[in-house]
Image 1 (cartoon, rainbow, N blue to C red):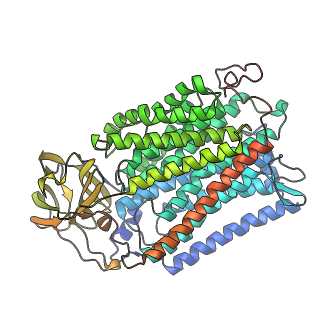
Image 2 (image 1 turned 120 degrees about the vertical axis):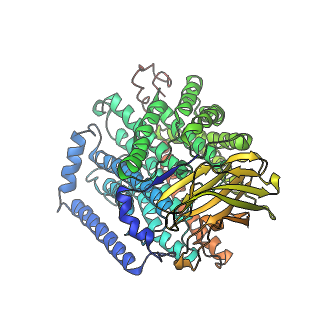
Image 3 (image 1 turned 135 degrees about the horizontal axis):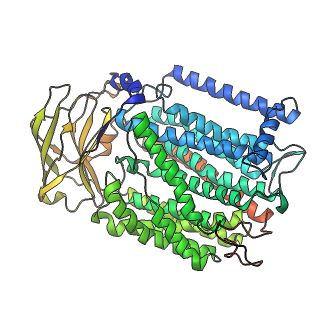
Length: 626
């Protein structure tokens, strides 16, 4: 199978950078750092001036905007939430577009000349700064009032909603990933992978900001008496959108699999899909009511599918597959018919269903939707990983929904369940990171059907592994070419034991990095076919003669040629620990926020029902759409 998509449109703007002989491989140029830092400082200063002006009464723009938002779509919601919530949601959409655009550009073009030379970085920066701005707005807007019992005291007469504080924190955490990413590249080289620690900060801060937004929405609803609450369908729609947004945010971690260039074992994909589905869909089903999981997935499909269409169809870059999630939503809705009044049980049962029935549905869907569809090689382990992720996510989703509703379980139970879920996911991720690269294996490549001159050379190939049993029922055996202004993923045809052939010609020219990739059980290995010269790292061209034999080696050394190999291990451990500490601080802060809501805003009325339900008698949570 060939998937060969060349960048056009806006991607052409980076063509000169792609052809540059020595693009930086260890951090941005100092002039770009200075420009970016100056711009960030200027924007922050403007934000602080407006905040100070609003608090002192010297600037009334924010007051007028909050009043306008309160009278518009946010009617029934205090201005300190009515304005920040749409600002945060729009900012997230902008950042999401930028993230998938940026990932596509790096896959198809490789490194850029610096952060300001990559056009996709701008929507990311604007979106993440918008999330931070939304949090700051929620913090500074309340004047002359305390925004609810869960609010945080800033000064003697200034209280800020907890959701606003956490939203600003999530935005700041994500923005912090940018300078740390440059430091990381200077120390360790240019790691072209989505799962780089600082890359995960950018993604995690944006995705988890939805939890802060949900907390802010709960505080806003509690600040208004029942007579002033917005119509039920508005509250229902808002919650479903936030649940769908959380699903989108958690799904961005799968982006390498969406594009078909994962640098990790395939069993991670069902784990991540089930984790996202369990957490987001159980939470929205309990929080919004009947049908909430399905409506959230519909919102996810519109937004996430729309981003893929924009990036591939309008901008002209690579297509990213979109996991379906509808089967997982139905699993949650079915389980809720019997277990809606037992949230933790609902989370666990939904997780098991997501990890089994949902796994089967994604397995079938992936055969036509994924560049690297699932295979029997991952069937047993992949389903076990999916069940682990589904149950852990389902339990976290149940805790989130119950906390937002003000009816969380006892602290000891909540902490135990949350800690157990985190440990289970950590163990599953660690299991997926265990790989093996057997010694003494080789691949003999014979080129066929060679076409074009040196500047446009393509060829097919016949590949023979030695020993012949080196590849047995693999998850994938592909020829992958990337970073040559396109992406080429060709799943090879098996002729007999250990012998494969290509389906389509592969690129062997220009900036293309073309290699054989083998994923069989825990084996994750590669064989380089053609690699261009890279003066920035002192690498010479690796040509592709008519016939050659090369060892099977770790594919990481091929896919990430720019990584420095002389960095001491202790330095990697220290830097990773810093990123981990920042991440734990964010996660624990959000957990504190949910617990604070549960303690200080206990449930006083049943949650709004779904659009097709009618309220039941007091205490009947499922009839009320719980």
